[in-house]
Image: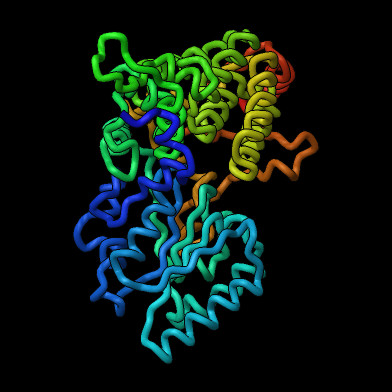
Amino acid sequence: MTSPTALFQGQTPLAVRMRPTSLEEVAGQDHLLRPGSPLTILANPDASATATSVILWGPPGTGKTTLAQAIARSSGRRFVELSAVTAGVRDVREVMQEALTQRDLYGHSTILFLDEIHRFTKAQQDALLPGVENGWVVLIAATTENPSFSVISPLLSRSLLLTLRPLTDDDLRLLIDRAVADARGLAGGILLRDDARDALVRLSSGDARRALTALEAAASIATPAAEDDDGTPEITPENVADAVDRALLRYDRQGDEHYDVISAFIKSIRGSDVDAAVHYLARMIEAGEDPRFIARRLIISAAEDIGLADPQALVLAVAAADAVQLIGMPEGRIPLAEATVYLATTAKSNAAYLALDAALADVRNGGFGRVPAPLRDAHYPGAKRLGHGKGYVYPHDTDVGVVAQQHLPDELRGRRYYTPTSHGQERDVQARLEKIRRILEGG
């Protein structure tokens, strides 16, 4: 029997060995691999004339590099890979020149796979344009950042933007079982318990590379099961926990725990319990939750639960979301923590949110009428003849900037939606609003 240690010595990583050699082997991304889709056309060796450059946008471990290599193998095209971390403008220009030579002299089409294109400067991306525009290369660019912010517009307009999704639990189970059985992987030389497989799926959080790396590490420390007569090593949940050096978290990104933890996170912020909020933030980060999802919930919390009691909260939450988008993880945890602590400890008010809900309820129940004539648009021909704008008083022409004037329709005159609290800065809004409403009503 082959020893567990011998399974791994001198080998390339399991995640690399198990990379699919064709699109048929790719797990997940079914929405991008349907017959007739741009990627399947690109992988067709007889469809070189219709090949289109693409930008693959998705989280780590969703198969961007895998798709590029599978397409290159299936299509029979030359495959050149550059990383934005190490390549410069000169490297790009050399690839373009060689691709032009290969096309003109030998009729060979070239696929240029550019990983982490968001790290390229504008000048480096500009160097790609001639080759992409003239068809010297078919560009497959990969990025974990939003291309709308990280890729220049001319390159975006010449490429198809395809969004990859995190792998589902079923996709991950398929990949893990294939790696255990396949000759390129563990070749059936190890047993994997069902609960250990579930642990790998939970900890990988939709990331195939993380799942296979954890599987390989767990297999290296697995020991034969006591009841197994042939001495085949068996991977247990404890092996998985030891291998990845983190506690096994009961956290399923598509299951109840996902919703329970994010709910507890938001309710802890709303309840001003900063310690509980930071705890739930840590659980989500450690379980591999998408940091952009956390950032979006912080923005919602700032607007819904804090509102005008501290208008700076929304500014800080949006800044944290931008920071996460720009710097990624693990550093992105720092602005997330800053925003969480700020939101949990500042004053709270949902008055603005409740005001809109009350107004929406009126509108949905038919509680609206015509806009008062003084407020209607008077700029188009014939509007004044209809009385539009007549009697409107321009507030800036007055000393206090507020005038007695009706703004709501007649049917809703005197209606109150916004009731500020006495919390935080909304206390000042409350006093100011009382004066404004007295003036508006002619008092």
